[in-house]
Amino acid sequence: MKRFGFLIASFVFLLAPAPLLAHHGNAAYDATKEITVNGVVTEWIVANPHSLLKFDVTDDKGSVTHWIVESGAASVNQARGVRLTRQLLKPGDKVTVTLMPAKNGQPVGRIHRLVLPDGRLMVNDLP
Amino acid sequence: MQNFVARAMVLIAFVAISAVAYAQSSDTKEHKGLPPICQGEANRFNCASATIDGQSDAPAVDAWGRSVAPPAKRAKSAPAARHDLSGIWQVDGVDEFGFRGILGIFGAPALPSDGYPDHEPPYTKEGLEAYHRHKPVFGVDAVPAAQSNDPVKSCDPPGFPRSDLHSLSTMQILQTPVQMVVLYARYKNWRMIWADGRELPQDPDPTWDGYSVGKWVDDTTFVVQSNGTDERTWLDNAGRPHSDALRVEERFHRVDRDHMELTVTLNDPKMYARPWVALDKQPFRLMPADFAMSETRCSPSEMAAYDSLVSAPISK
Image (tube, each protein chain N blue to C red):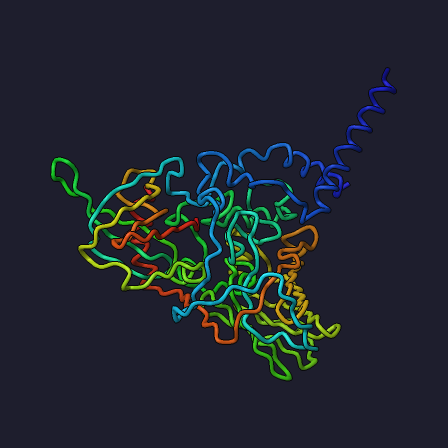
């Protein structure tokens, strides 16, 4: 009887999977949005668990936003054929960053694509 | 009429129970297309195949920046040597999320936390309660990093068997006459499997990586039994729990010189109603002997910097 009760409970569980589907791996980010900004690098930090890129974006009126975006871990990207090194970026470099922004509107994001100063494209596809 | 209703109810119950029994008996049931956690606008960036069109299979570089030649297409491997697992092993192929060369981002690869109801492990009541106390950053119940209580967030060791199941990519196996030593690239973590004929401890004092003993069951299959893993560790990225009753079986099968398969079966009667397979004949390929594995440390100071610069500002 105990076993039967377990099976019924499982059946109810199977009928109601919807709440389980409401979350996702990038919980603090808004995965429905992707924005592209042009900026100037202020700092590039190769680190675990995620390398971090700080850059400034100046709008039409001259006001500056300090962005910080995360990439995958250096090692993960190495294993995937994209090698993140300390030499990859330096302050003053001009970059184009396509990113997934934070849900709360802070200038924080997760890099999807980064056009390096030499035109090479770095892609980050790990969640 | 009453008789008909009673029969119909019995039939409905039978069909329902059969369906449940079927779902529970097929841990590795095949699903077509992207899993639910990748579907829809809000989830599209969870999965590699949803992010990049025609993801390239560019030659990898190792930790020294040296390029690594991709394996020759259709080249025939030499047979496996007898009783030999030694080598550097890289996860082979692409997983259901489109990730190449890395496994277990969304939890145990054979039952990922991806939104398919039949990929839920067979929790007991205690197991489900323990799972709900865990706040993972991956899987269907993921929370923002600042709200997570994942033990690796504070650089606690992943422990075993999480080392087999957590974002697994590369491992090196060193072999002596009495030991198999596994070096995991992730966290620069290693564990020892004793192959000198000893038995597992009866009443183990818990440790992060537990106690492991292994033996060859045929020329190319090494079977490992483990117990005694500290209960503070999680099984995987998705926050699946375990108790002190956990027993793990790993089957390392070297298919030929260049290929190995690993199956991991978890048995924890306190947390799960029955044993379940967490890694199912997962293929690995042998890397060149001069391949340098990447350094993936958990650095408390780098973790603190990440938390203050990224996690905290976006958590509210």
